[in-house]
Image (cartoon, rainbow, N blue to C red; front, side, top):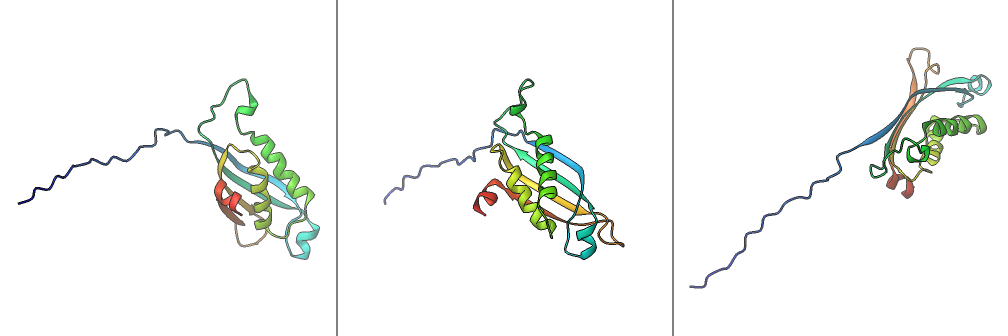
Amino acid sequence: MEKNNFKILELKSKKNKNTVKRTVLIKNFIIHEIIGIHNHEKINKQKIVFNIIIDVNQNVLPSENNLLSVVDYEKITNKLENLAKNKSYNFLESLAEDSFKEIFEDNRIGSVKIKIEKPDAITNAESVGVEVFKSRSDYEGS
């Protein structure tokens, strides 16, 4: 009788050693601009509220003496304000897409979740809006 020689292998999954997750939050950033498709929306500025969650590359550590070592949320909010001010938007969805372009200019950013709302657009609603999540690979693929 022939004998089978089997070797028993133990398979272990590699654990991600990096458990740090750094997120930059921009909460309830408010601007007032013209946005919308209706005639009254093209005349009067509306309140636009941004809520943004940005996941940052964990391999870049912040340095207390170097602003370039962190994602500058003031720079991001200035870019968002300029977008809405300098371009005419019919849809929040279009504003969101342009916002991704501005935010992903920083290569340290891995993913972004953007929620943009117009709280005064519908009388019987607290707000209306759009929420979109994109990873860097989603963005670079689009």
